[in-house]
Image (cartoon, rainbow, N blue to C red; front, side, top):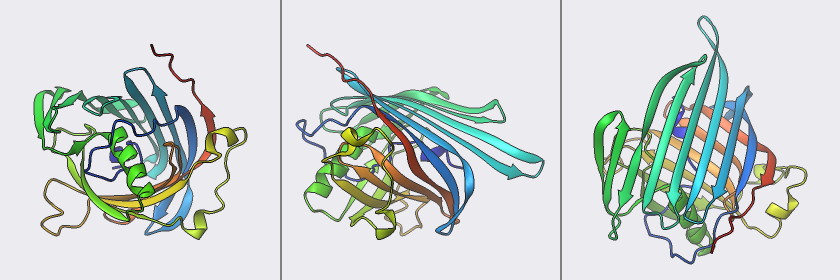
Length: 267
């Protein structure tokens, strides 16, 4: 159900980001995860780990979500793992997404997506083998969208529409409608993990909420397939977020650990 959660949690604009936009800070972070039901916070159900490495050519994203929930035959432990490598220019994305239940792999999706100089392209899947999907002009990958979100927030924009692709399924990009707003008072008390002040100091906090629609569902007035919200810093570090399915169930995650990763040495 929550495989779509594993994605960089800053999703917003259709407009391409200037090449001079600031780089995100390479880092790794851990989060405590609680269940939510129609906005009401529930019990602890797992953990989420995120890592962003920066090379001279690309961003490398690694994510792991582990949940333990009560099932009909006892507790069920699920793990969802994603690794994505996105070029610095936002035109190529290599992706691999795995889902595991009680130690057994239940799904694997992997492949590569490439955009041309007009922003359109194709995604080709090696698993499931032989499948592909077209990427319309304006499609953005995770880091490109995250950087665009920061740009629009700093420009004072309060909402935008976009197309988003990260390779979870061999399907067209999803339409995204995002609202950028003031940080809610209930999030003002989020504690910065010990030893992480240097990563946080001097960076603006950005709050947004986004709805995701399959294919042309948004234009037809259909309900979003899922929604998410995020409190992030303008250097790409996420402090808090939610992922909610159409039935109102989902998860909330809050940062518990944060540390910097080294910058690459590029000629």
